[in-house]
Amino acid sequence: TELKKALPKKNTKVKTTFGEGKVADVQILTQLVMVELEDARRITVPLEELEIIPPPATTKKEENDTSEGKEQADEPTNNAEDKNNNTV
Image 1 (cartoon, one colour):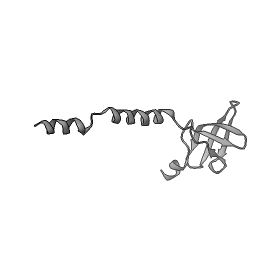
Image 2 (cartoon, helix red, strand yellow):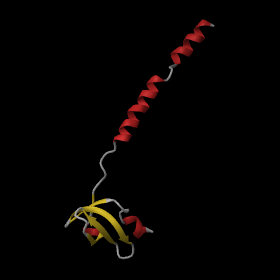
Image 3 (cartoon, helix red, strand yellow):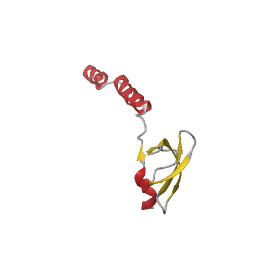
Image 4 (cartoon, rainbow, N blue to C red):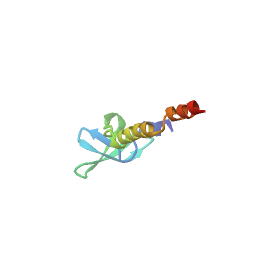
């Protein structure tokens, strides 16, 4: 399982000496990665010769962060409870 953890998952974007592409398949024991290049060619390269391209920052997370902040701002504050306690 440690050998498998070192390998990129299918469809992960990678950079090779032949150009950029996506992981099409992996060979766990030999640590080889089959990459489908942008021009549709498939090549097999050793793991050491790959550079994994990090995914772009997702905007959904940023949207969730701001929506959570809005929800917190829209929640009633303890001031309303304090007013009720003062009238008793």
